[in-house]
Image (cartoon, rainbow, N blue to C red; front, side, top):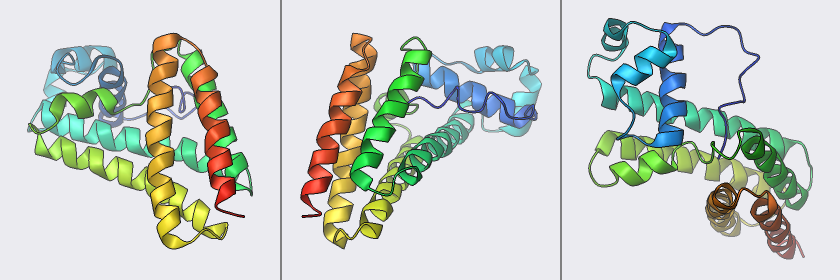
Amino acid sequence: MNATTRRQTDAAPGTRERLVRTASRLMQRQGYEATGIKQISREAGVALSSVYHFFPSGKQELAVAAVHHADREFADILREALAGEDDPAEAMIACTRLLATYLSDSDWLDGCPITATALETSGRVPDIQQAVREAFDSWRSLVADKLRRAGIAEQDARELAHTVINTLEGAELDAQVSHSEQPLHIAGRHLARLISSYRG
């Protein structure tokens, strides 16, 4: 799910933040294994020694921070979409429309900011896997809160939140591969129908 274009109007970030943002963008596009410390420092415009100053344990520590950054960025997008519509069904359509725009604007490069890293490090790098789990938990929590406030029962809200995030993940991957916004728009419509069915 794209978040790298989200903060272009922010004030210039400090050195640590530049490193984290750069690592997050590179890991989103090329994965954890292909993203090296030297490339991160070069593209962030930061001396290699500074990387180890802020992240003494090296790449893995920086990657964990990058996943947390991606979590917050996508959570902001999700929160904005959910807050923009009172009806959670309509909020799903708004969310997929927003994601489709971000993905298209990135020339189909910036899908979910953590998928590649999550898959590459599965079962091998516990700290990164924990950060990934926390990201998914936070996204599901935002959706579940919206559904509960709309009167959907607790268990249904939690299970629907899983379905929403899983569907968004798959739809974004499909959109990225096909260079088309259509998978996300379709997902939004069907998620809206599903959620509406729980509201009678």
